[in-house]
Amino acid sequence: MNKEKRHQILSRLRDDNPHPVTELEYSSPFELLVAVTLSAQATDVGVNKATRKLFPVANTPQAILDIGHDTLRDYIKTIGLFNSKAANVYKMCQILVDEHNSIVPENREALEALPGVGRKTANVVLNTAFGWLKDNEGRYFLAVDTHIQRLANRTGYAKGKTVEQTEQAIIKNTPNKKEFMFNLHHWFILHGRYTCTARKPKCGSCIIEDLCDYKEKTES
Image 1 (cartoon, one colour):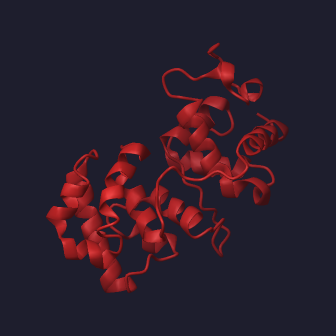
Image 2 (cartoon, helix red, strand yellow):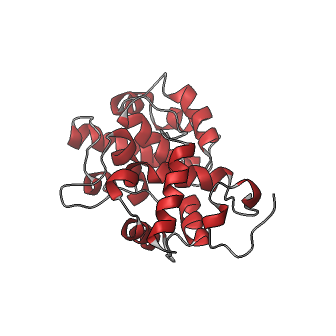
Protein backbone atom coordinates (compact mmCIF):
# COMPACT_ATOMS: atom_id res chain seq x y z
CA MET A 1 0.00 0.00 0.00
CA ASN A 2 1.36 3.40 -0.95
CA LYS A 3 1.20 6.78 0.75
CA GLU A 4 -1.63 8.05 -1.44
CA LYS A 5 -3.90 5.11 -0.57
CA ARG A 6 -3.23 5.55 3.12
CA HIS A 7 -4.06 9.25 2.83
CA GLN A 8 -7.34 8.42 1.07
CA ILE A 9 -8.25 5.84 3.72
CA LEU A 10 -7.75 8.34 6.53
CA SER A 11 -9.51 11.12 4.62
CA ARG A 12 -12.60 8.98 4.06
CA LEU A 13 -12.72 7.82 7.68
CA ARG A 14 -12.38 11.43 8.80
CA ASP A 15 -15.08 12.66 6.41
CA ASP A 16 -17.42 9.94 7.69
CA ASN A 17 -16.69 10.75 11.35
CA PRO A 18 -14.94 14.13 11.77
CA HIS A 19 -15.03 14.13 15.58
CA PRO A 20 -14.76 10.52 16.80
CA VAL A 21 -15.00 9.77 20.51
CA THR A 22 -14.50 6.72 22.68
CA GLU A 23 -17.59 4.66 23.46
CA LEU A 24 -16.49 4.31 27.08
CA GLU A 25 -18.41 6.69 29.35
CA TYR A 26 -16.29 8.94 31.59
CA SER A 27 -16.17 12.45 33.00
CA SER A 28 -12.59 12.66 34.28
CA PRO A 29 -9.14 11.22 33.51
CA PHE A 30 -9.49 8.90 36.50
CA GLU A 31 -12.83 7.55 35.32
CA LEU A 32 -11.37 6.90 31.87
CA LEU A 33 -8.34 5.19 33.41
CA VAL A 34 -10.59 2.85 35.39
CA ALA A 35 -12.91 2.23 32.43
CA VAL A 36 -10.09 1.34 30.04
CA THR A 37 -8.52 -0.91 32.66
CA LEU A 38 -11.82 -2.72 33.03
CA SER A 39 -12.30 -3.00 29.26
CA ALA A 40 -9.56 -5.59 28.71
CA GLN A 41 -11.22 -8.67 27.18
CA ALA A 42 -14.60 -7.02 27.74
CA THR A 43 -16.95 -4.88 25.69
CA ASP A 44 -17.38 -1.13 26.15
CA VAL A 45 -21.12 -1.78 26.58
CA GLY A 46 -20.44 -4.15 29.47
CA VAL A 47 -17.98 -1.75 31.10
CA ASN A 48 -20.42 1.15 30.82
CA LYS A 49 -23.16 -0.87 32.51
CA ALA A 50 -20.88 -1.46 35.48
CA THR A 51 -19.40 2.02 35.74
CA ARG A 52 -22.84 3.67 35.56
CA LYS A 53 -23.43 2.13 38.98
CA LEU A 54 -19.87 2.45 40.31
CA PHE A 55 -18.95 6.03 39.41
CA PRO A 56 -21.91 7.76 41.11
CA VAL A 57 -20.77 6.07 44.33
CA ALA A 58 -17.00 6.18 43.88
CA ASN A 59 -15.22 8.06 41.09
CA THR A 60 -11.97 9.13 42.78
CA PRO A 61 -9.06 7.04 44.04
CA GLN A 62 -9.88 7.80 47.66
CA ALA A 63 -13.58 7.08 47.20
CA ILE A 64 -12.81 3.64 45.81
CA LEU A 65 -10.46 2.95 48.71
CA ASP A 66 -13.24 4.06 51.06
CA ILE A 67 -15.83 1.61 49.68
CA GLY A 68 -13.30 -1.21 49.92
CA HIS A 69 -12.07 -3.96 47.65
CA ASP A 70 -15.03 -6.30 48.13
CA THR A 71 -17.62 -3.62 47.34
CA LEU A 72 -15.63 -2.57 44.27
CA ARG A 73 -15.58 -6.17 43.12
CA ASP A 74 -19.35 -6.43 43.53
CA TYR A 75 -19.89 -3.38 41.30
CA ILE A 76 -17.81 -4.85 38.46
CA LYS A 77 -18.69 -8.54 38.83
CA THR A 78 -20.58 -8.52 35.52
CA ILE A 79 -17.31 -7.85 33.68
CA GLY A 80 -14.97 -10.64 32.66
CA LEU A 81 -11.91 -11.20 34.88
CA PHE A 82 -13.57 -9.06 37.55
CA ASN A 83 -11.56 -10.56 40.41
CA SER A 84 -8.18 -9.62 39.02
CA LYS A 85 -9.48 -6.28 37.72
CA ALA A 86 -10.88 -5.35 41.12
CA ALA A 87 -7.54 -6.14 42.72
CA ASN A 88 -5.65 -4.08 40.15
CA VAL A 89 -7.98 -1.08 40.35
CA TYR A 90 -7.86 -1.09 44.15
CA LYS A 91 -4.04 -1.25 44.16
CA MET A 92 -3.95 1.43 41.47
CA CYS A 93 -6.04 3.73 43.64
CA GLN A 94 -3.73 3.20 46.61
CA ILE A 95 -0.70 4.16 44.52
CA LEU A 96 -2.47 7.21 43.07
CA VAL A 97 -3.31 8.40 46.58
CA ASP A 98 0.10 7.63 48.08
CA GLU A 99 2.39 8.68 45.23
CA HIS A 100 0.45 11.01 42.95
CA ASN A 101 -1.77 13.05 45.29
CA SER A 102 -4.81 11.27 43.78
CA ILE A 103 -4.04 12.75 40.35
CA VAL A 104 -3.68 10.62 37.22
CA PRO A 105 -0.14 11.23 35.91
CA GLU A 106 0.31 12.63 32.39
CA ASN A 107 3.28 10.38 31.73
CA ARG A 108 3.31 7.02 29.96
CA GLU A 109 5.97 5.44 32.17
CA ALA A 110 4.17 6.50 35.36
CA LEU A 111 0.87 5.20 34.01
CA GLU A 112 2.37 1.86 32.95
CA ALA A 113 3.78 1.46 36.48
CA LEU A 114 0.21 1.27 37.82
CA PRO A 115 -1.32 -2.19 38.37
CA GLY A 116 -3.39 -3.36 35.41
CA VAL A 117 -2.20 -0.55 33.13
CA GLY A 118 -0.35 -1.49 29.97
CA ARG A 119 0.86 0.50 26.99
CA LYS A 120 -2.56 0.57 25.31
CA THR A 121 -4.36 1.86 28.39
CA ALA A 122 -1.68 4.49 29.00
CA ASN A 123 -1.90 5.69 25.40
CA VAL A 124 -5.70 5.91 25.52
CA VAL A 125 -5.61 8.01 28.68
CA LEU A 126 -2.91 10.34 27.38
CA ASN A 127 -4.56 10.79 23.99
CA THR A 128 -8.24 10.84 24.96
CA ALA A 129 -8.34 12.23 28.50
CA PHE A 130 -5.43 14.67 28.25
CA GLY A 131 -5.43 15.44 24.53
CA TRP A 132 -1.79 14.52 23.93
CA LEU A 133 -0.63 13.62 20.42
CA LYS A 134 2.95 12.85 21.42
CA ASP A 135 5.40 13.48 24.24
CA ASN A 136 8.34 15.88 24.39
CA GLU A 137 10.57 13.22 22.86
CA GLY A 138 8.32 12.90 19.83
CA ARG A 139 6.79 9.53 20.81
CA TYR A 140 3.20 9.27 19.61
CA PHE A 141 0.45 8.07 21.92
CA LEU A 142 -1.32 5.57 19.65
CA ALA A 143 -3.37 2.89 21.40
CA VAL A 144 -3.54 -0.35 19.41
CA ASP A 145 -5.97 -3.09 20.41
CA THR A 146 -7.13 -6.25 18.64
CA HIS A 147 -9.55 -4.33 16.40
CA ILE A 148 -6.82 -1.97 15.21
CA GLN A 149 -4.31 -4.80 14.90
CA ARG A 150 -6.73 -6.71 12.67
CA LEU A 151 -7.74 -3.69 10.59
CA ALA A 152 -4.18 -2.50 9.94
CA ASN A 153 -2.95 -5.92 8.88
CA ARG A 154 -6.04 -6.97 6.92
CA THR A 155 -6.26 -3.77 4.87
CA GLY A 156 -2.52 -3.63 4.30
CA TYR A 157 -2.27 -0.21 5.96
CA ALA A 158 0.45 -1.48 8.30
CA LYS A 159 1.89 -4.90 9.09
CA GLY A 160 2.91 -6.22 12.49
CA LYS A 161 2.85 -9.60 14.22
CA THR A 162 2.42 -8.04 17.65
CA VAL A 163 0.37 -5.09 18.86
CA GLU A 164 3.51 -3.04 19.49
CA GLN A 165 4.94 -3.85 16.05
CA THR A 166 1.65 -2.80 14.48
CA GLU A 167 1.65 0.41 16.54
CA GLN A 168 5.11 1.35 15.26
CA ALA A 169 4.22 0.40 11.68
CA ILE A 170 1.08 2.56 11.76
CA ILE A 171 3.04 5.52 13.10
CA LYS A 172 5.74 5.04 10.46
CA ASN A 173 3.30 4.67 7.58
CA THR A 174 0.80 7.39 8.46
CA PRO A 175 1.08 10.45 6.19
CA ASN A 176 0.40 13.98 7.39
CA LYS A 177 0.70 12.98 11.06
CA LYS A 178 -0.42 16.36 12.39
CA GLU A 179 -3.59 16.00 10.34
CA PHE A 180 -4.50 12.39 11.13
CA MET A 181 -2.67 10.87 14.11
CA PHE A 182 -4.75 12.37 16.91
CA ASN A 183 -8.00 10.66 15.86
CA LEU A 184 -6.57 7.62 14.06
CA HIS A 185 -7.09 5.35 17.07
CA HIS A 186 -10.81 6.12 17.20
CA TRP A 187 -11.34 5.84 13.43
CA PHE A 188 -9.63 2.47 13.27
CA ILE A 189 -11.21 0.97 16.37
CA LEU A 190 -14.73 1.98 15.33
CA HIS A 191 -14.22 0.76 11.78
CA GLY A 192 -12.82 -2.52 13.08
CA ARG A 193 -15.61 -2.91 15.60
CA TYR A 194 -18.55 -2.28 13.27
CA THR A 195 -17.40 -2.77 9.67
CA CYS A 196 -14.13 -4.68 9.40
CA THR A 197 -15.30 -7.27 11.91
CA ALA A 198 -13.27 -10.31 12.86
CA ARG A 199 -15.29 -13.22 11.45
CA LYS A 200 -16.96 -11.63 8.44
CA PRO A 201 -15.99 -8.12 7.40
CA LYS A 202 -18.79 -6.06 5.86
CA CYS A 203 -16.87 -5.21 2.71
CA GLY A 204 -20.00 -4.38 0.71
CA SER A 205 -20.81 -1.45 2.98
CA CYS A 206 -17.20 -0.39 3.66
CA ILE A 207 -16.24 3.15 2.64
CA ILE A 208 -12.61 2.13 2.04
CA GLU A 209 -13.28 -1.21 0.31
CA ASP A 210 -11.70 -0.11 -2.98
CA LEU A 211 -8.52 0.97 -1.18
CA CYS A 212 -8.16 -2.20 0.90
CA ASP A 213 -5.68 -4.98 0.04
CA TYR A 214 -7.77 -7.76 1.63
CA LYS A 215 -8.07 -10.62 -0.86
CA GLU A 216 -11.18 -12.37 0.48
CA LYS A 217 -13.69 -9.53 0.30
CA THR A 218 -17.34 -10.20 1.09
CA GLU A 219 -20.39 -8.76 -0.64
CA SER A 220 -22.36 -7.92 2.51
